[in-house]
Length: 415
Image (cartoon, rainbow, N blue to C red; front, side, top):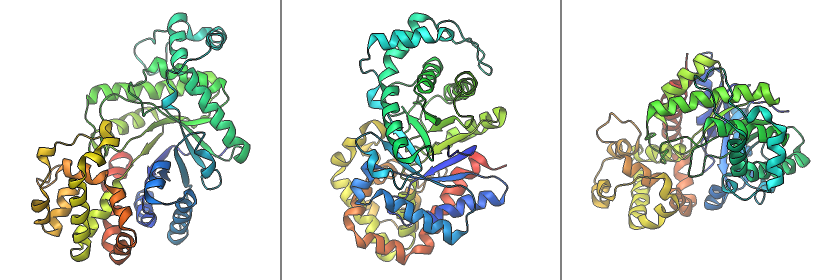
């Protein structure tokens, strides 16, 4: 089985130009004695918007690896794949995020539920898990309810995994994702889910549950930090317990997804990792695209003009752009700059309006979220956008590396 190190971090590169700049952030951290493995991820939907192919992600990453001399492990993630989309990723990916959130709650055969419950008497009574203060209250009826809710999702994960294994054998990392759903999974639910995955013989190395709170695109987490810390800590303990109880891979760890920058969560995750010795896989989404815009704004001239054009289009088509992301954005139209006011900003002020530094009075999270979901506007510009990225390579790369290192990797992992 291809194994995942203790720490791994997913990075997106929607237009395929920033892999080397991203890798530079991991190299800076490695020079400080902390090894974090990069995982390049790009969803099927993003490929559709951009017009790219899964093999393009591996090709761009491989060039960056060769040019940078990176010696550590690295991965390419088939991000949020389903059975109908996985085939396109089999040859180019070695990390598969199996998304079964849509199957949660689908009807399952009562005989299958009864068979599972009968096979797991340890899940039909209260369970004490090291690291969790309160006893996990389970009963035969309670466990049956959980199984009824998640059985179909875990069965679908098994079908997708077996399809992957037929092509790739065990030379892959498997993640099971249930985060894109309405309700968070509780620690008792996560324990039963892991038992279901173990029974299905899925060598899951990361599991992505949904946590409480809002993980809006491109901005910080919104929610009860104490509650998140309790949930994250309890879920870490559940994973460790399930490894021993059900023979799951020792590398099993939590994965924290979403487009949120999660800055307020990093100290919490860091504390738990240090206290428990556990690992984590964390994904970002869209950050690199925003840093490209910031770099082009700083470059002034044609770069700044393109950023203004993207914003103008986004404002004129705001409702259409926002509709698919309604559950993961929180944009107050009254807080958005008018097109005229945005275009009156200097390059540096435009960059500061987008750049996620909360102490900067110029930062506007509403503008940032709108631009976050407007990446397909740049895709429609075609060579105009990519040529500007090449022309202003140095300043764009500096934004990408600095953001990834200073605002993500260092706060989360540095000694």
